[in-house]
Length: 143
View 1: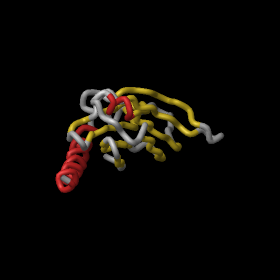
View 2: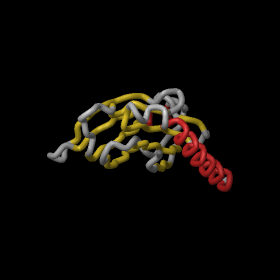
View 3: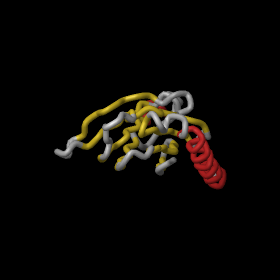
View 4: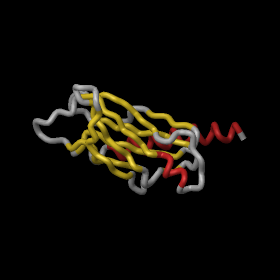
């Protein structure tokens, strides 16, 4: 059983990285930030997950910039529109509200939400995906 879970997790990670690389290129020019959730317990994307984007202000407090739901492919591709003269340098966080997602499947989960903090510098595209299961998660900077 443990071996099967490890194999599923490894397969899910490879799937996420492959899908991330092929999809992210579409809106990279229009938006500076995107995200993706892959449920590694099923090997499928996680649709209809509420995700909040927040930016840390100079005072240290957090400001809500955007709130969206993942699409049927577990993606949000349109955070932080690229606009001439607008810089997005700063510290951000994405908050993935995972409890409702697992409850809708009749599953308990350990983490009520997943919070990923990261920095944006310059005008490169940032893709911040997570792989998720009811009792764990992982994140990385995608491309």
